[in-house]
Image 1 (cartoon, rainbow, N blue to C red):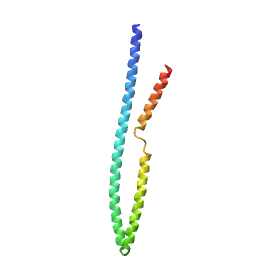
Image 2: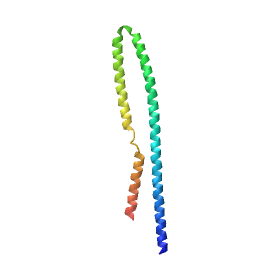
Image 3: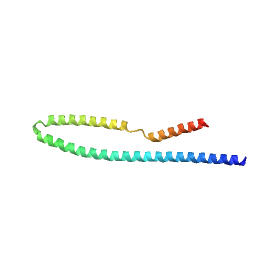
Image 4: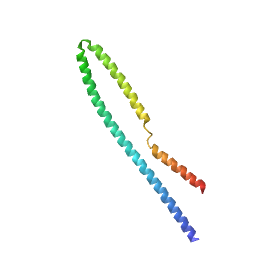
Length: 128
């Protein structure tokens, strides 16, 4: 009888150890995803801000150049350039929106792993 209870205790200890290992692995995966997402957002923000700054300077200088080049028709040129910039800005915003929507959902890998763990535990429980 004492051997059965010690075997049962060992089995419970192994189960607890396995569960703790699974939880630890999933938490590490979650932490990695959060860190990766944070780095991605920082990089995206920095690149976007830099691009926006340099595009703004370039567009401003190009606009001044074109207005000076066509000085006699400056109002028509300014109107046409303004319309072109607004159209380009709209296209860019649509591209940004599509890019944000195409990004995988946060923690999707962790959720998939936890779902798979739950399914495996359910299968193991059903077999017992």
